[in-house]
Length: 256
Ligand SMILES: Nc1ncnc2c1ncn2[C@@H]1O[C@H](COP(=O)(O)OP(=O)(O)OP(=O)(O)O)[C@@H](O)[C@H]1O
Ligand SMILES: [Mg+2]
Image 1 (cartoon, rainbow, N blue to C red):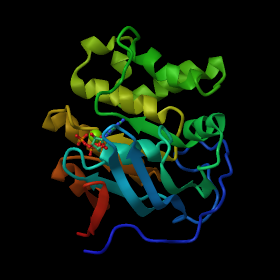
Image 2 (spheres, rainbow, N blue to C red):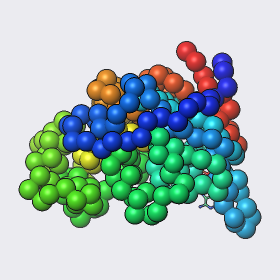
Image 3 (cartoon, rainbow, N blue to C red):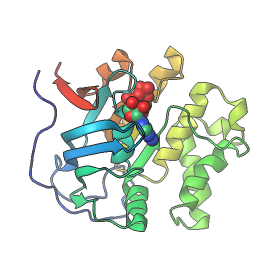
């Protein structure tokens, strides 16, 4: 066991490109840091005030597959929201692909998020009155992908998740596993280099959970950087690195 997180030099600056491989649009060495946190903290003012994330140091390198476990309320989602640029820290520094995210304007943060990050949430967050295909396609609308490209790209993303036959189905008619696969297709359709997942198998039976984890293995083999929050030791066991969290602190890196 070693302590979680380590300091290291900032990574190279991002250089957006057009390659069709997840994670391939950033220059620099293969093990360049994707995420570098120094003293990152989040305090909710309350009342009562809650320090959901104590000052935290962590480095996640390109193509790392990192699991974060910890009891309910330990700050896992808080950390993930900060990493996903959905929330701003109260203190500390977060470099994403070497870019200091602190001084960025809201539109710049949104653009960086759209270009680099895919999200998979426990509760799927699919629009109930849109088909699977429309749900995936909408993710492209937000990121200025030309209209003519949206449908084929969304279809391809659903196909790779084994959902070619369910593209016109509404989420309410899909199984939990299928819904989660639509959510993953939506997270991947913008070809992010970093996939952040909050309890991605939390609502799934074991067969569907295995299918999702198999897909993560494929994505990891293709070069994606993955960060997965989970309560489930089986899920954590599939990741290359495993960090435990307690009371807003990354307590230890569990090595296997
Ligand atoms: N917006 C908020 N305002 C105030 N407190 C919050 C807010 N969001 C989270 N918290 C608190 O911060 C702590 C960490 O919450 P967080 O959601 O990060 O936990 P978690 O580890 O993801 O838990 P779970 O496993 O139940 O999802 C909790 O005490 C929670 O009540
Ligand atoms: Mg949570």
